[in-house]
Amino acid sequence: MDLFAGVDIGSTTSKCVLIDENKDVKVFYHDYTEFDRDLSGEKVLNAALEEIGAKLEDVKYIVATGYGRKAFQRANMDIPEIIAHGVGTHQVEPEARTIIDIGGQDSKVIELDEFGTVTKFEMNDKCAAGTGRFFEVLTHRLLGIEMDQLSDLMKQSTKPCNISSMCTIFAESEIISYLSQKENVADIAAGTGRSIAKRVLAMGRAAQIPYDEPIVFSGGVANNPAIADIFADLLHKPVKAIALPQSTAALGAAIRALREYKKAQKA
Image (tube, rainbow, N blue to C red; front, side, top):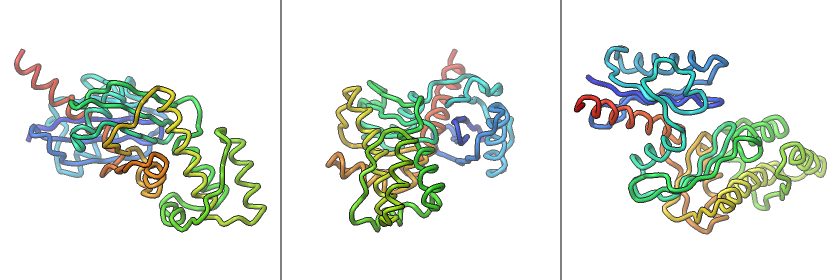
């Protein structure tokens, strides 16, 4: 079986998607990104192959994306992650017009046309606020809550606390203040989620992205359904978390790999 690989080497997590010539996903594998980005790419590619009992020679073309894409030496080519997100999202949600993506150390708002082409985008990769890392640090370290427990906790909130600061350090001070006042932990967690969502939405609005529907939510933070609900509440529009939300950029890269291989075969 001929396979085509997309490898997304992100700041915190590396992902690999293998598809066949019909664009059917055969496997999605992810693991933490190591300091050696090339090694991270090799690790997730080999693990994905092992999971389906395939060999490296079955892979006809590899496209890399993400922060570490230039470091992955086995890739035949690399593409920007914004482009990969557009292609991958269009494959699983062809009607989508807006992507909200929150990863470990960045956040993005992307506008798509009916062909899945990126027409406009804005990205925050300079500041931790509005990212998964911001969320993880503030909730895990200060509230003692594991990420997989957050969604259920946040849904228990009846009056989310107002975390007004956009800076991680000052937001931390606000949370400590709420804790000292014996505020409900669920309300603090929900307030933190709303703070992140407001920052991301403001970033997109500053880029004049209109948040046209359908709106989809991807990235590691999209594994928390309560955050999708917060976005929907703030936008007054439905927001759908994509299935396997961390896979879209790797899927887009895999589809590009298939296209490039077919193009080369015709040449």
